[in-house]
Image (cartoon, rainbow, N blue to C red):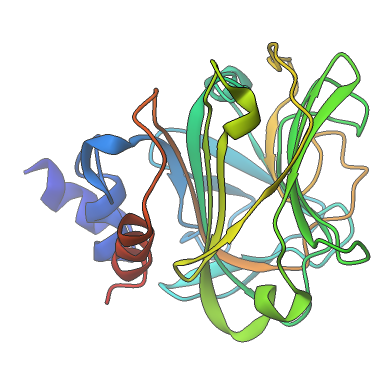
Amino acid sequence: MRALILLFLFVSPVLAEQFSAQNFGIIGTKRTLVDAWFFNEGKQTATRGVRGAGDLLSGPVWITGYHGPGLNFLATNSRVELQNESAFDFITQTSTWTLIIVYKADNPPNGIIFSKTNTFSAVGFYMQGTAAAADDMAINFNVSGVKKIYTPPLTKAQSAGKNWRVFIFDYCSRSNKPEVDDVIFSIDGVIFTDTNDGTIAGSIANNNLAVISGWDAGTSTPINWRMDMVALLRGDGRGPLTTPELKLIVDRVLGR
């Protein structure tokens, strides 16, 4: 009965079933759903996730997405601020978590994709597109001004294109041997292995809101992506995702 109700709540039955009808969706018990946002409202100034809400600020534009409505984050400072910041405190250097985004980009990423900090120097984390850099995506942890940065050998052409694509970032800490943390950047199921820049430990919990595309202070360039959905899952030490699991996520998210 619950599954039937949820199918009516979202435009996409595939996404509703995979992310909402059970706590362990999309790839089974290896990952637990934290929240997922489908951007299916189409005309509101807020968006509902499976478990929480987010406020649309500084002009993200409603567009036609892959599964229904989506959001365009081209406008300066455009972002979705997720209201329960403490729900994301589990994202540390010693946790296991996965970020999934269905996106379309005419150009390589430039700006913030997902963050929980309000400045580049603040304690927290951010996923960044850096189109002017040699590597054009990076995940950044910051503990007391000391950064831990992962970047994949990903060319600009591999991150953009005319079609809707599935971006997956999977972080699996090896806390006893942090120099061999499993960090995966994947687009459409193809893995781009990271380069590991340094090892640090500590909490990145703070009181800043988690944000899709930008900072909670609204002072950062948003990612130049159109997004159809964003999902965050946690692994609690269950190990990294495998190539077959990544491809399974892509197929299920795209309804193939």
